[in-house]
Amino acid sequence: MKSDNYFMDEAIKEAKKSLDEGGIPIGAVLVKDGEIVSRGHNRLIQNDSVILHAEMDAIENAGRLSHEDYVRCTLYTTLSPCPMCSGAVILYNIPKVVIGENTTLRGAENLLKCNDVEVVILNNNLCRELLEQYVCQNSDCWKNELSKVGNTTETL
Image (cartoon, rainbow, N blue to C red; front, top):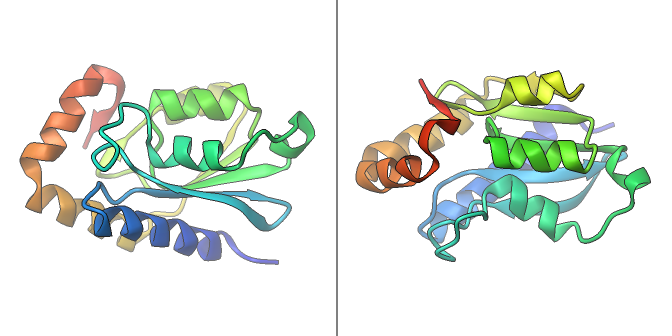
């Protein structure tokens, strides 16, 4: 059986795709029964979108799964999910979220936990380094994106 680290490496590949496209390096994969069913990466900048976070992109790319499929899924994301993405996890009854890191930005982890979603934090250094380097090199863009969401996340 493939490990959490294996799937996080796949989410990191998605984060790097976003970075290569000029976007924010955040990636996600949706896994059902040990197999990746979809991939996604942050497309806010590339698509001038207000909702295409990596998690939303991965959920959208999975297509219309059944309830029975979603309850057998785990969402792997390189960064702690925001309230919107956490809400989608709750809405579709995804029972587990594995987070690469939550030190650069902490999302709605308590919302997930209060809704009986298992939250695992890997403290993956590469996830942190990718985002920290992006923020350092693109501070105005990062501040602009954070200002759009207000107080829904906690910057650390």
